[in-house]
Length: 116
Image 1 (cartoon, rainbow, N blue to C red):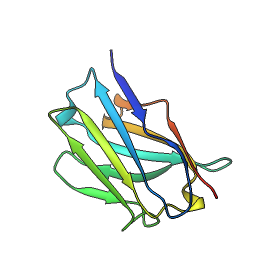
Image 2: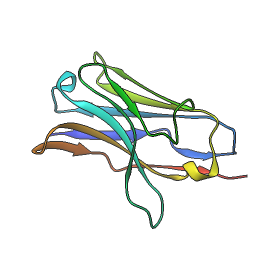
Image 3: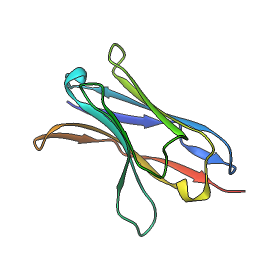
């Protein structure tokens, strides 16, 4: 049974930091691209950052220089360090494990709210 579980969301003031964690089980973790997506109210889900199997990392332009994604293949975890948070970063953040159309798994999401 595949499980993707996020943690670490919360309320933070603008300019603050949060660290999101995602633990995956039931998959061959090393063979999956691990990513973070977010969805704000009335907006489409968008890619935030993705760590590919070959080591490539992709960031959305809006978070470059502020967010850092990392993965630990020994612990089957991926983290997203978010610094210099802005109100527009407020969203429900999802962890994704992707290998193919048939092997594409999502967590339930963790809420990040940036507000003064």
